[in-house]
Image 1 (cartoon, helix red, strand yellow):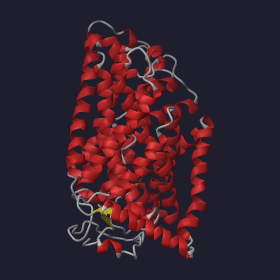
Image 2 (cartoon, rainbow, N blue to C red):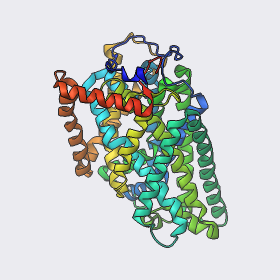
Image 3 (tube, one colour):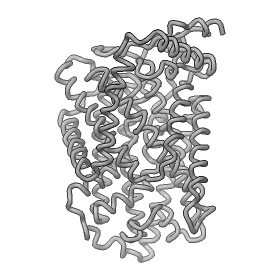
Image 4 (cartoon, one colour):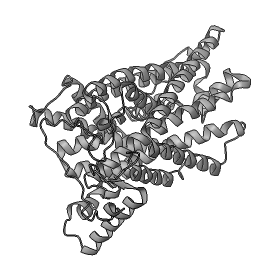
Length: 496
């Protein structure tokens, strides 16, 4: 341990912005580094696995409630998938132009500088990542416990305990081995798509039995208020959230220039089709009133169509959410790892396990923050918090793409999307953000306040270099203690 104890000069890397033609696909065999272990199918499994989670079982009720009719709800689902596809293509250009892990954090930093990228990291730390993970973990717990409490809601304490337990178990798996993570992800992704396809064919059997009354007058009651339609799109887009998660792990993707856009182009149409068919299945079996009154639309669906084996649907939902949570933990931990590597979080979070080559401190840190948020059970409010703030920073990333098209026209771009796509995506995101300010002013106001709070935090802890010596020594002691505790070293260190 002598080498670890001697690391008095631990310091973050520079943010390394402005490179015109940087190639990060260099040899990763020197020093302690995260290994490139993700192939194309792993990439597809991550995107599909992260997206297809709790959203498809939580959002149908909310989308129908705010769109007013089944026909408009289906339009919202299809357009949400199309909008997510457009956004994903824009991110394919960003990901191949800036082949760094961290997703939006890296792109906003490259385009606009350190402060905006820190604000994204700051909000991701307290809202986007842990809240999304908490929603998924709570949904898993509620559904895995549902067969034990078929006639009532499972106890809140039991739900929170199960959610916390599965979060910790998946964190341990992610700490141990990346190959284990990808195998778990591949298996659960295949299983969850199969489960949703079975759901669709069960609804076809119901329709062919002569039950077509629920698909009549599909457009009756359609909502025309822009604010309610914006909330419907928000809840639909929440179910598609995760299409940019592969960009968080670009540095671990084999041949990212080829596999990143291919994974996006394969996974997004698959998810859109699966979501559309699943909603058609729900709408064919359940009436509008039944869906809106249901707290768990998939469970209500199974009780009506599956009879004595209705208990299997909560297990399907749990299966979907488990795979989604696993993928989210794996990818989002790399966001905090990169942020700490650039000096925007405590350096200890950027350390890498010398034996397993995984960012153990980052994973543990994210697990602790997620556990702290598991106390909230108001899923609808959490969705608006997450989607409103995420849309704002997604808008910033795409604005950065357009800005770099103008300010850095000679930058290497292996993929160059038609200019109409980022402009259209920018306008739609701006519309959704503005509408949400009127329909959910409290949630959006809290989100903006948290973003603004990040400015003084940046000035004090990042920008201010002349910190007291005692504070610098305390930070160095903390970093050294974490390095010893987890047997971790900074990236590119060659021995222990």
